[in-house]
Amino acid sequence: DQQVKQNSPSLSVQEGRISILNCDYTNSMFDYFLWYKKYPAEGPTFLISISSIKDKNEDGRFTVFLNKSAKHLSLHIVPSQPGDSAVYFCAASWGSNYKLTFGKGTLLTVNP
Amino acid sequence: DVKVTQSSRYLVKRTGEKVFLECVQDMDHENMFWYRQDPGLGLRLIYFSYDVKMKEKGDIPEGYSVSREKKERFSLILESASTNQTSMYLCASSRADSGIYGYTFGSGTRLTVV
Image 1: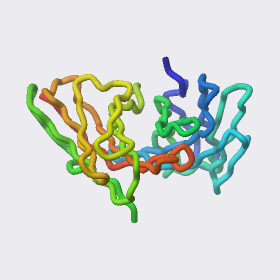
Image 2: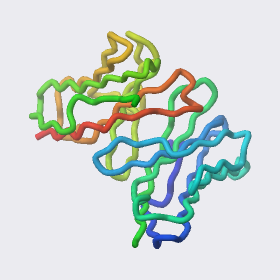
Image 3: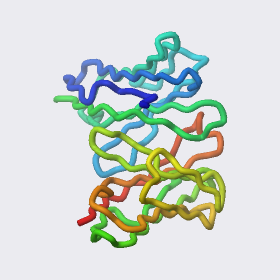
Image 4: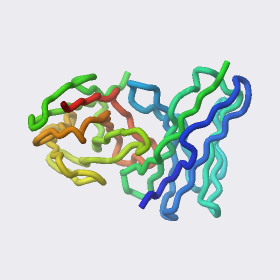
């Protein structure tokens, strides 16, 4: 049972345009959501997070939106840069549970 | 600069060998994790530990065991390596309240079992 779903295995965008990566979840107990970025042959690195009491969190070019009623979150990257090309993982946790549940990832390619 | 260090970047082992993957963190984190990453399957949790000598199974513990004798070190053991354990292995650590702060990952160990 996949509780965190990233339905798009890959996404390709032009440099300077917006990248939108999507994530759906099924467990209504999740109250924290995070995005990680991973380059090949490296470990994932934390990018941005959002608490379930918010619907938006912004950090520079990166914004995460949370729609609790739809159990959906999205990561917007504006403007996209070639260095943003990586695999992006959505992750979720709840309460004092220290486990993160990850999606399968989306490979973002930003073309110059 | 805080770190999670995995002892090897690349390993090649033979089928049936006992394999040890080592992970050390210098952040005094309570929690440590072992994941494997496979194409199309994302990150899957093998084992985790929330305290010294404590361990809990993750989603795919079969064929693996772990050891945490010291707070900073978490070892993953493949009792008898098989070809289906060829994968990228990622260690991570986190504070006890990681729901907010998330994990810090190591760079990974690419294990090939032949």
